[in-house]
Length: 103
Picture 1 (spheres, rainbow, N blue to C red):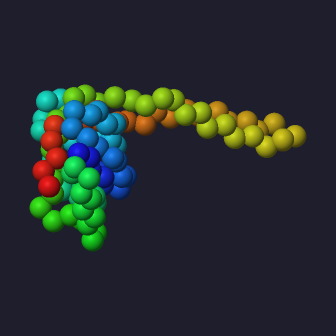
Picture 2: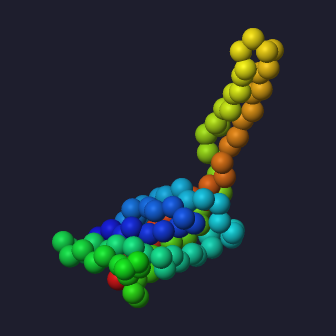
């Protein structure tokens, strides 16, 4: 059984006991969360597609920790002008354990 769920504008394919790294959410570690923007549910070969969401479907999970992603380097340069700027950025994510899918 799996589902496709919309979390903060991004779509994730989730299954029970799976970890996902979603965009940063409010809440402490150990806080339960639920997502009701379920776009598709597959259960034993039966696929239910929402229009736009599946009515009554929920995905429940638990926040495990807040982490930072890999560093992304932003480098700007204009040749022959003596202009070069280097910046870095680390995106913040929330590690979520998917505990169940209710269709």
